[in-house]
Image 1 (cartoon, rainbow, N blue to C red):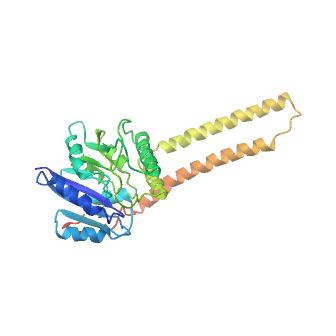
Image 2: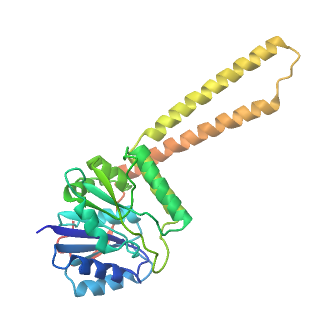
Length: 310
C-alpha cells in the first residue's frame, strides 16, 4: 500500500489547522497509510498547543516545532527531512485548499509527471497575494526554465525521489521551485477549487515576498549577473555615442557652451547603474558568505511523535 506524507507549514493558523487535519484524515480513511507532518514556524498564536493536543490522540500526526520564524520554504524543508511516505502532499494551513482534492493531484502522477501543482480557476486572495503568486510563477519560468504552461502553487504532490533530491540542499536560502526543477522537469497542473479564507490573513508581507524573490534570484540562477553585464555594456555604449555626439557638435560649432545639465544627467544615470550592479553583486557575495559560515536552514526546538530526529 502506498503511503502518503502530508507536509503543512503552520503560521497563524490556530483556528483553521484542526479543520485541515480532520479533512485529511477523513479523505484518506482506509485508502492509504499516511502521516501528517505539521511544522510550526514559530507562530505567534497557540497553533503549537493545538497541534500538540491533536498529536496525543493520533500517532500519525507528527509535529516539528521550530525555534524561530524561518519562513515557509525553510519550514517545508524541515518537514521534508522527516517524511517516510512514497508520495508527498504539500498544502497550506488556512483551509483554502480542500484536502479531499489531493487525490485529483495524486491520480495525475504518472510517467510524464513527477510533480502535479494545483491550478485555481478563481483564486480567493487579495490583489497583493495574487501579484505575489503571479510574480513567483513568472520568476520561476524565467530563472528556472519552468514550462510557461505550468502554474506554481503551494498545493502540490510529488514523488518521493523529488523530495530526497531537494533535502540534499543544505544552504540557508532554499527556493523550492528551483530545487524541484533541479530534480525533474516533468511538471503538470490540475484544476481544483480555491476557497475563501475561513479565518485570519496571509502571513506573507512585502518584506517576506521580497526575501523569497531574492532567494530565487540569487540561489539558482546567474541570469541577474548576466543582465548586469549587458546593462553595463549598453550604458557604456550610450556614453561612448554621446561623447562622439558632443565632439562632433563642438567641431561643427565651436561657440557652443558645454552643458552642465546634460553632464549631470549622464553622471547620475551611469552612477545609478553602477550602484545597482554593485548592490546585486554584493547580494550574491553576502549570501555566499552566510552559506560559508553554515547559517542554519532552520533550528528545531522539539518534535512530537518523531522518534528519530534528522
